[in-house]
Each structure stands twice: as C-alpha cells, then as structure tokens.
Image 1 (tube, rainbow, N blue to C red):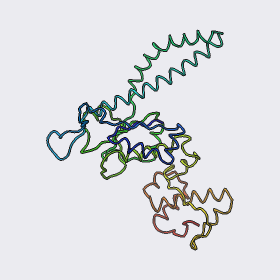
Image 2 (cartoon, rainbow, N blue to C red; image 1 turned 180 degrees about the vertical axis):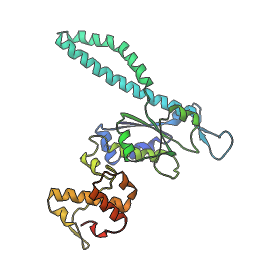
Image 3 (cartoon, rainbow, N blue to C red; image 1 turned 45 degrees about the vertical axis):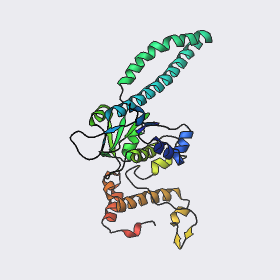
Image 4 (cartoon, one colour; image 1 turned 90 degrees about the horizontal axis):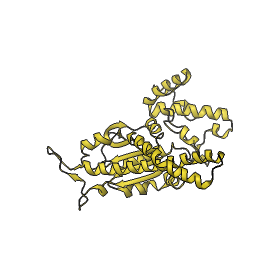
Length: 301
C-alpha cells in the first residue's frame, strides 16, 4: 500500500506515521508514505498558495494551480513506479521463455532492451487513463467507517488531499477528486489529522502490518459488532476478577463468550449497528432485550 499525501505540513504526516505500528510497517516495506508539500508548486517567490475568495467572504482559499501541480507530480511518480515494476516482470517472463530456447544471457538482455520501450509506451497511455483514487478530507464528505477502510485497502495507491484555510478552489476538486470523506461532523484546522486517522485504519488491514492478522478480523466493526472486553494479569485487581470462562481453556465456551459479549456491548453502546449485524434469531432476541434494558445480568459473566 502506497499512501501519497498532498499537504502544507509534510512533517506532520511523516512524523506521525513513523511511530508505532505504521512506523514498523514502513520499515518492513508493507506501506510507504509520500508526503508532498503543495507549496513546492506555488510558482512564486513567496511560496504562497492561497488568495481571497471571489464574491467576498471570510478567510482565504487554496488556489487550483499549486494543488493540481502537486497532484500531477504524484501521478507521474505512481505511473513511473508501475512502469518499472511491470517492465521488470515482463522482462523476467521473456527471459524465462528465452532460457527454454537456449538463448544467451547477452542476447536476452538485448531483446528486453529493444522490446520494453515500445511495449510500455502503450502501457503508460493505458495507465494514464486509469483514475487513481484521490481522497479529499472534508466535513462535507461521507463519514469514514470500517467498511470504507476495507474498500480503500484494496487499492495499491491512495492520494489524500489535505485542505486548509476556508477550502480549495472548486475547479481543481472537480478535476482530480474521486472521494469526499469526513471523519465526523466537526471542523478541524486542516485535513492532516483526518488523513492520519484514515491511513492508520487502512494500514491495519494491509496483510503483514499487524503481528497477528487475525486481530484485524476480530476488532470492533469487523462484522458490525464491537469487540468483546479484554483482560490481562493479575487475575484479581482491586477486588475485580477476570471472568472465569477466560481461565477455563475451553475454546468452545470462549468462542461463545466472545460472541455473546460482542453482541451485548454493541447493543448497549452502539445499538445503531445491531440492525446491520448478521445475527441468529436467538442472538437478535438477546440484543433486543439488552437494548430494552431487560438483561443487565448477562454482561461479562
């Protein structure tokens, strides 16, 4: 997974992503983070990227040209990387075939050099027509959730556009943006924090990022249910004991307890999710009892 971030504050992105799980994922080559400063494409000596809004109004608006220049630079980087990768793969396939034909290594390399140029010129044209997903972080967008994260995690490249000031010239948004996404109904100073939230969430779904890939499958929202309660040592803390089933070693009972507690917790804390979860008739009846406040005794036993 390759994350590309169009921002006025690249250090904010790089420093945050270099820590914890995402930092280890970067070192392991599971994800990459390319934060690009929009000011580098300002085209003026002051590196100014904003101006007064037409029609008046408070604040400043980010100009279209620097944003578009930044986007084109990232797009070119992505396409160049894809060309190199595809070029290498195709050449290796050709060499495998030529090995069978008993062609010398020198002749193999010459053949690859001669064929790559015209074959991949056509490939590049095809790639240019393919739209790379550009996510504009905006309170006007669809609210980000786990389902959306799973969808984005299927992409090889994602571009995040972080706005600032009063917003960005609408014309460039119409030109490059594929997805408008919000992390909630509130306004932040810029799009960097929402971008970091999204990248962290998406990264966890990339194979190999978590030490245990099962973690991502059992966490909250993985099946529209919240995760069950967690406990660790000591068994007795301040007179509060770990539920006995967790000490039983009975895997069948553990699985049943995990499932039941997920349903109970979801019904209590996020009842809006219950309608989306796949539940048996018995499980749905339990959830409805919890939401009606009729079964407090079931919690954590």
